[in-house]
Image 1 (cartoon, rainbow, N blue to C red):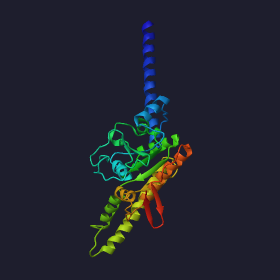
Image 2 (cartoon, rainbow, N blue to C red):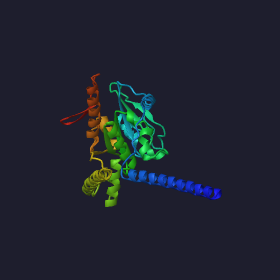
Image 3 (spheres, rainbow, N blue to C red):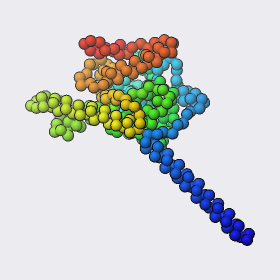
Image 4 (cartoon, rainbow, N blue to C red):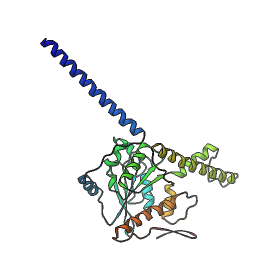
Length: 299
């Protein structure tokens, strides 16, 4: 009788263990299902974590802190250099051109001290062993004043996770697709063009191809982002399409041709900083960019 009781107890324990395993597997599958549908786990940083993150990024109340985040290889470093009016090879520029260059957060002040903006190059999600939904908290993105979500080819779950968390923390976000000139050239080649800058025979045809490729790229990009946001049950949001090369020209007042959203993005970013600062009643940022009739002027 005693042996039978022991056997029953063993069976009961085994059954309970199996149920726990089933519940754990079900919980894991449910979490994965929610993640696929854009439902991110809610993880709120503690007060101590916020203080530590601010200390890590050297946060100052008299500065406006822009973070550029997203998947590795999107051109974050080059875009930051352009915003700061620097070529990639200039002294003080962010390192570019090497796969997985940014493995730790990098902080860059504006070369002109008159403008109290600080730019942060956030490690690309693809270079770190961090899940999409953990990326936001792991990088301490909740302490920044504004976040630029930059992507090159695909709008990913990492981008959705960043936007979702920014909405929770009421952090302004800007979706930006980089390397526009490169993508347009690729589309032109698919259309049969060898060189978009041909000045010889066929130059008119090249211009038509460029306009067609440009329009196709813009439409495809905006529709793709719209669809991805919709699939994640998020409201539609503008996507800014830019070329880092043209952005540098805009910042340097070169008035480059073929700009798409470079001027609007720069003005909107600086406008965000000015609005945020005005609300704090601690002063005002000087305007970096103004669009005048007849062209762009940079102070």
